[in-house]
Length: 281
Image 1 (cartoon, one colour):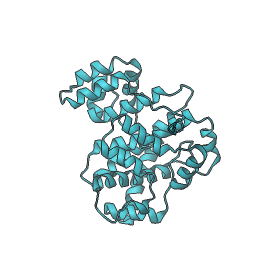
Image 2 (cartoon, one colour):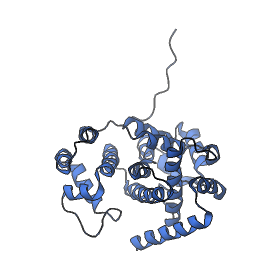
Image 3 (cartoon, helix red, strand yellow):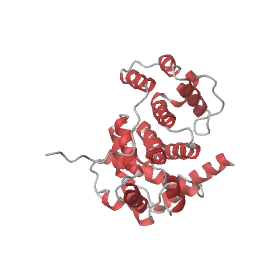
Image 4 (cartoon, rainbow, N blue to C red):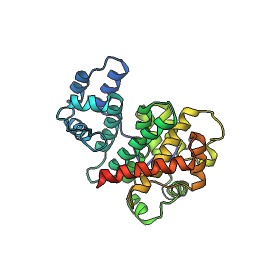
């Protein structure tokens, strides 16, 4: 009897490039230095240039421009640099016809907000918060790459509520961008808390079990991300890779879990929105 075969997936999760594998091994060895990391990254000129450019973006820019990769590493930090390398490597694996500039901009903005919020509501890892913010929707470019009509899908529907968006993707394409984001995070050996927080985005907030402290580190990461996405959404009008939204009563559950009142979050939100507006002015 022939075994039933699973339907072939319309996508292939790209493998990590050799340079990225070498960087991960070096960081895991606890013997990494700025000089040794520079030596590895220089092997891939496209990554080298992209990392240097990223260090001079508003999110990381600081007071002055950096002109060398070593300066960039010292400014950004080794672990955040690893996340940036992952996203840049993923970006390089896609067709050059894909315009991912807006996707990159939103990811960097959400990552910055997630780190800042996480610092206010928990004592967890800011590196994990940054990784989650940068990679939480990394399945969107893969959907654009693998599915011919995905851009038309985004342009033609009201993305609106997160779970309605995912349900529509599942119905039409047999997969969704959160599922792909999780598969990428697992294939590329992201921290387990980050991968778990990524896949929990697909669950309705009411079903996350926020009434209990079980699995608290992952829930705090996820809640920091959800609040960051709410603020990022408010800071921009329309985008082809916009974030899905949550109902106000759902966000209230998130605020209760992280210990913020609605007034506190409203003040925080206004502060962040003003900072983002000043930067974009």
